[in-house]
Length: 374
Image 1 (tube, helix red, strand yellow):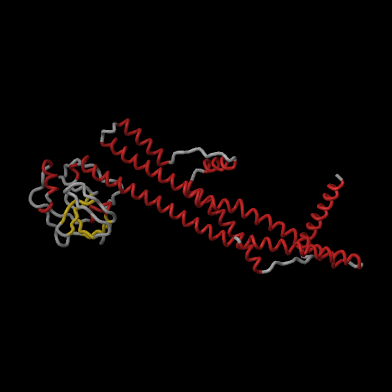
Image 2 (spheres, rainbow, N blue to C red; image 1 turned 45 degrees about the vertical axis):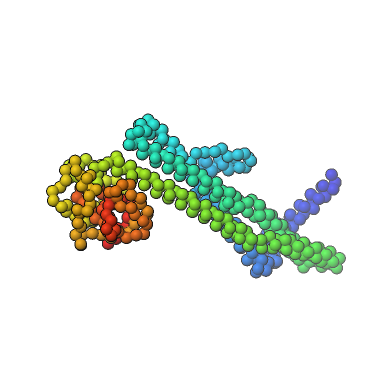
């Protein structure tokens, strides 16, 4: 007990000495041992790494999980070392609702069939999102967290020790200056040598840890590449899923609305889709039909026999194909991405479709697959 009291008194004296030295330095009444420029640069680099790592980590967490309540819940599970419960993604939940709605409306109805197709795609998108979130968490977020909770804590601890060693060193220098008697000077010089040794040893330990920040950057760079690869795979999957869905809906649209390609003014075709540019039909030259206008009974037959339609030389536009398109029947024109074709419209034609020509080939093409050129 007596030993503990002495140690406590000694620690209190050291703390008081450091506090006095720190206060006098702030007031400009005491000298401060400065670190070399290289060491200061290492400290600045470490602080910069820590600050930006925290910001990138937080914003990536927001990107992967926008719901703050869920993020807090997952954080608590992690701190309690318990497994985070599995949750459905928003896409999977939307898919579930669409499938249930299709069953209520009738899976054999046009609306029900479409809901099932879109719901299946949303489920696949939700699964791709889940895989991306898992991959990003393992390959990107965890290494950033490990740095902040491991290496950075060690660096911070050693920096605090170094700061205390520096205060002790400068306090010893101040006592040596104030010492008058020879015995007091000898004692102060011994304390200064010990303090200088402790400071140099701690400075070297801290320097080695700070120089390891460069290795941290290399590791984070590798993790960043893996994050980009995961994100690229996720968006590529989403693009392909939506492209497949668009083709399915495009082929089924012709089955559900066979009279929407060519018709007269009394046609009962549905209104143009909201995603189609409202001015496309107005900006595409309209070619007059040969002879009398077809009646509803022969509209589709006339649409399939497109060889009779002769567009004027100055009444067409060029278009670049954005994506590959597989023709659903003989009335459509198959497309290859990045090829150039000639397009124009026909009277009464569905605004979502145009007539496309490529050499001697001719057929319907979807507007959403084209970039119209001036």
